[in-house]
Length: 146
Image (tube, rainbow, N blue to C red; front, side):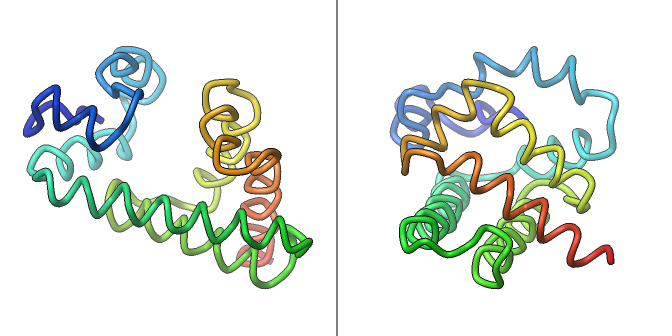
């Protein structure tokens, strides 16, 4: 997914902070470039405006903050609230990027804990959130595929 199409360097910095999606574009394309999800994401995001990206980023941050609140409250990752938030996250990806199946979502959850870059980014919201997120995603997928 390339966000540089309709965004200046200043807008990317404003929306994504220290993360520059272009720095990881080649790696992402190597990993997923031949998939339908990659093609769908590229097609959808090519027309996104700064306002679209702002909504995307804000929605994702709200979901993460609510999941962090659930974790801090001691709610189990396999409980209804955490699984509902995982489902909201999956729907968010489907709405904005590509059809996020439960299999793909489980893979994202695994990447959140296996890739230190993702773990650090997610855990910046709350320590341990990446692992909690993965557990909620895994439980949600099991709930829907049972």
